[in-house]
Length: 138
Image 1 (cartoon, one colour):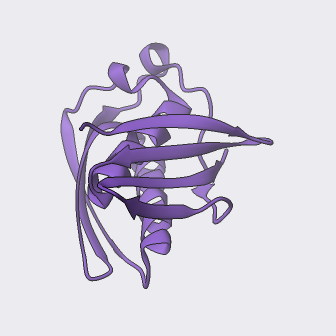
Image 2 (image 1 turned 90 degrees about the vertical axis):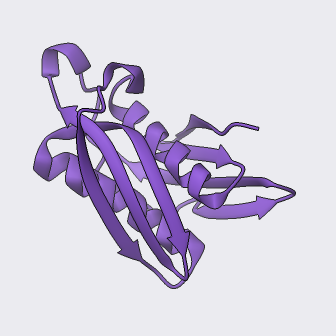
């Protein structure tokens, strides 16, 4: 069963949710949702790879760290990402994100995410289905 992603409304901010058969897949799908906050992920070519490493004492904080690491790289490298690979183990995440430099005319960025919050922060796996969600400050 494949994963998925979606956005959900939250006052002035926006929620991101990823689902998948594993926690890693849910984190990958949530990263696509993060890109969708800015632009259509289908319009972002996976041309350059960026490595991401983070750690945290629990799965929820690890998820927030992952999204914030991506937001940081989006900002300082002026990039958008459309493809992700995550490996999780023992409170550590090793990931890769593929994307390209922002082209304002083609990507038409809607907003710039400022950070993943702890509002609605949840990571749960039950019966072979995982979900990772939180609210992103825009």
